[in-house]
Image (cartoon, rainbow, N blue to C red; front, side, top):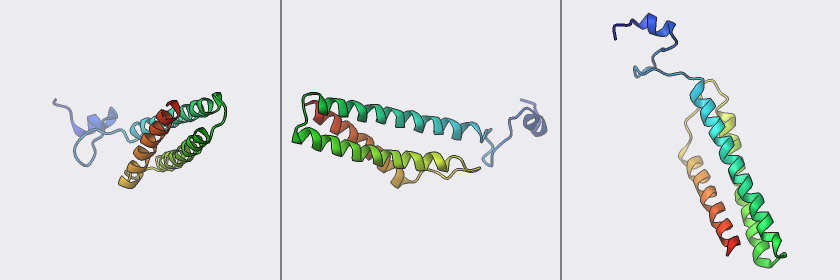
Length: 119
C-alpha cells in the first residue's frame, strides 16, 4: 500500500521469487517442532502399548503386538529423525512422497497395533 520494496525489506518483509513475503527461518523451525511433537506422541502410544500388553500377563498375541508396535515405532523415529536433520539445512529439501507415505503408514500401523492390543 504505497510502500517501496526497499522499505518492505528494511522491515523484514522481503519477497520470495513468487512475490510473496517469506521468513525462511520460522517455517522450518515450526516444522521441526511439529515433527518432535509427533515423535513424542508416538513414543507415548508405544509406551502405553507396552503397559497394556504386559498388564494382564505376557501372552503370545500381546508380545506379537508389542513387537510389531516397537518395529513401527522405530520406523517412525527413523523417518522423523531424518526429516528433522534435513530441516537443519539452509534451504531444506521438500519432504519426499516416499517419506510422507512411510510416516503416514507408520502412524496408521501404530494406531492399528494399539487398537489390537486393546481388544
